[in-house]
Length: 232
Image 1 (cartoon, helix red, strand yellow):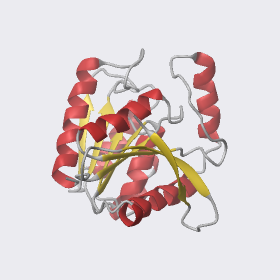
Image 2 (cartoon, helix red, strand yellow):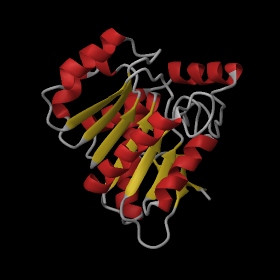
Image 3 (cartoon, helix red, strand yellow):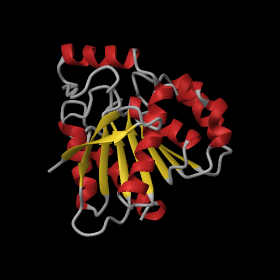
Image 4 (tube, helix red, strand yellow):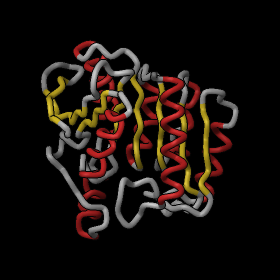
């Protein structure tokens, strides 16, 4: 069961919606889940519930809030898929990272949870990388992040653990981009990259046509172990 609250921006002039799933008892840490281009849909809400079941405070901000609130799209519906692409094309990633930082501050200050991890999917995987370079998040995980090969100029700022899940048959991240990313991050001791041979974008979706059970279960197990080590 998830609730919705509102978190102030860093500037304090506006608030935006954040979905929350609370564990029983004191949280062992907090995990921020960053959506794909489909908003905080049923799959993302289920992911924060799963983190709560593992003892974490699960938090999913609506990162498209500047365009619209309450976006909830189905990736298996072609029309809704294109709606998501439209939102992503207009998305301000720099403002989004400031919102992520605002959520980190809110968790630590207002919720009293000091250790915070972040996991993002697709567009959220890109945001996970940027969170690792631009915020003081304790640990980040990106699933099939898009465009990371174009952000390697920020890699020197990665000072906390970052885990990346990379499907080798990702239709949105061609082999040359994967190669550039691997080479650009190879010398950073904070970065761990796992390749998933033959899998495509979206393989770790909570459910739906894109999900690959074997790959998703393996990646999720690695993510759980990663956060257990670095968040709580």
